[in-house]
Structures are given as structure tokens and as C-alpha cells.
Amino acid sequence: MSWSFVLVYVHVVGAILLVGYCLFWAVMTIATRRELAAPDALRLLQTARAAAWPLPGKPLELTSIGWLLLIFAAATGLLCLPAGFSIDQLVSGQKFGTLLSTKLILLALLVACFPRLGIARTPLALSSLGLALAVIVTSALLVR
Image 1 (tube, rainbow, N blue to C red):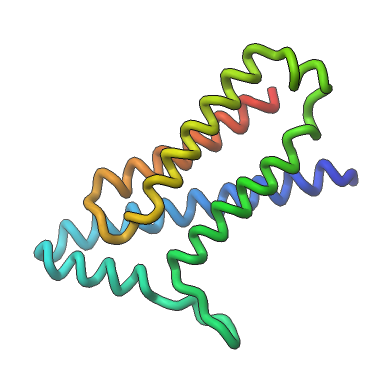
Image 2 (image 1 turned 60 degrees about the horizontal axis):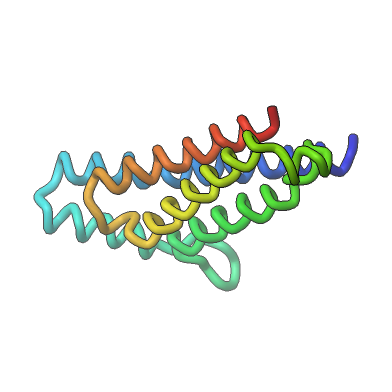
């Protein structure tokens, strides 16, 4: 088993966790908005947003875990970048450059959505999930 294989595997696991985090907020937002009045739904979402992950010692808020997942997936993606390509493809590949630019734009939009998860309306929660999935799709297309 090579180092690049392990890196890609870890990146895929991080991406799955990131999509799961966005899916959690989409489901929570839709369910609370559907079942509760607007002030109650907002209060419940803010409570979930501030919930601490039960780690021994110093608990992390749920939003901090989301940011850590995003940073982890991005960092392992950067480490994986040279693993599947020759230097010629990285420098001169037009299709690669377009896909990488698209992925970076989608990632920037996802980062812009992250601070509002848990306090915004349903369309933002759904768009964050869609953006996370779109980043995964462009990642998969990059290695082809």
C-alpha cells in the first residue's frame, strides 16, 4: 500500500464526513422549520449549533467540528493533488485547470455558507449540501 493510496483514502473519508455534516444541517433545518414556528425553530437550531461534542477535557462546538472537517478535507485534497497527475498534466492541462478552478469556486461558496448553517433558512442549508456534493463530483472528475 502506497502513501498516495492512504492519502486518497483519508481524503475520501474526510469528504464523506463533510457531506454528512452538511446533510445534518439540511435535515435539521428542514425538519425544524416544517414542525415548529419560526422563533422556536431558530432557537432550536441555535441550540444545536452551540452544542458541544462530548470530548474529554475540552469539548468542541458543533460548528467548530464542521470547520475542522472542512479544513481537513481541503488539506488532504491539497496533499493528494500531485498523487494522480504528472507534472505535465498539472501545468498544461486545460481541462484540469478548468475543473480545479470550478472546484475552488465551489469550495469558496461552501466556505461562505458555513458561518450561517444552523441559523439560516432552508435554501442555504440545502445549497451547502449541494455545494459539498458538487465539490466531491469535481474532485472525482479531477482524477480521471
